[in-house]
Image 1 (tube, helix red, strand yellow):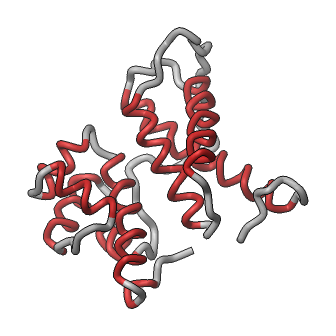
Image 2 (cartoon, one colour):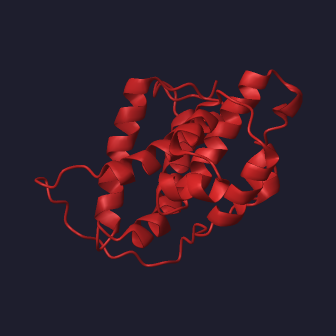
Image 3 (tube, helix red, strand yellow):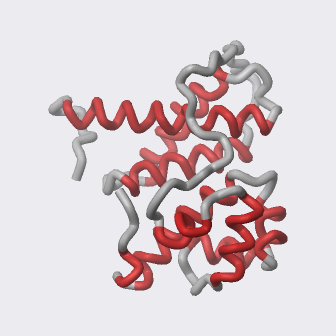
Length: 185
């Protein structure tokens, strides 16, 4: 689904823009690096993501360039995002055992949360904060099983599109099965 809501209520457009900004930020090393690239503070970037302020085109262009996403997609939600690491179902993933004593990595969880929220938003499906947490936990566990080095951020970024694809497939399958509670709105 494309975001043709530029002419809709500013809060709706800003909310959807905020999701795309968060996806662009997730392509970068850190939120601080994204803010620096956009020429703003981390606090201002948080306001962009939350849809609390109008976002200048110059800042979006700089963020798009630094993160590798398409500027037009960032502004409108239309067309390909051109994220650096597209999903490739033919890539062999080495699995590693899950270490139950290892604490959750908040850097990874933030990126997974952006995936969950954006997929549900694209599908126009509502999701409660509790269920965002559940989806994130399930996807985190799947991601940990798919990477060989959980501390390698490049590897994590390479696997995130596959995790996104798994969520989309699962939601599509659930929407076809009555009684799963995941039917599209």
